[in-house]
Image 1 (cartoon, protein in one colour):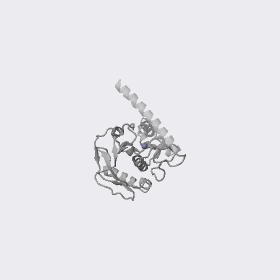
Image 2 (cartoon, helix red, strand yellow; image 1 turned 90 degrees about the vertical axis):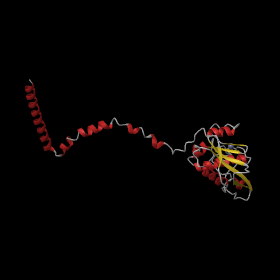
Image 3 (tube, protein in one colour; image 1 turned 180 degrees about the vertical axis):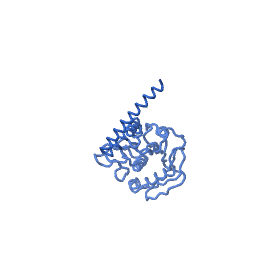
Image 4 (cartoon, protein in one colour; image 1 turned 135 degrees about the horizontal axis):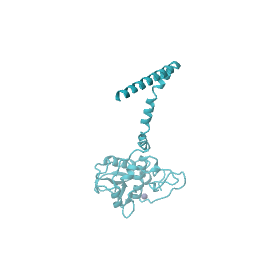
Length: 248
Ligand SMILES: [Zn+2]
């Protein structure tokens, strides 16, 4: 039985082989390339099958749409502030205003860099010194106000009774409290101009310390006054960080 089956099988295979050879020969006489074309079909078929179950590459596509990641700021900070050591001399002819810079311990911000950015903004020719006839001096003793960088939770605590909601900054008494989340992220309507937003933030809150209140956008297309609440919205105004351009 087995031998017979094998015998039949051999015959069948032999016949099939002859047919295949004949077909191959016939095809070969037509064109020499068709054989190459005839052989590869299994390969593309296999690769097609492999390609279809791999729509996995579509998953990582969100990556390019993500904006640059800002330094993540913890909502809750350590609750302790440290005065940034060192001094920055007053360089204006106006009345000297002595201030200190304090940073909440543990924030992912270099305190010296923050202090430097604050002082550069305050002493910039476009800043309050030209408008108010004052000269800012950064020091650590006998200060008239403090510029503080704090986590959202600490900002909320220090700003009471004002409601900063974990998002805003404030000035209460001699404390100018800048929310580190805003410092790190800015706001979308400044269109990625983080440096400009930070200058606005310093000038706005120190503007309160100088006695100025909020104002609205004066007219569409105008630069937003520094004392406008530009963190919330700029309305039809253009973002602006400098009191010499538009203050109040
Ligand atoms: Zn304000």
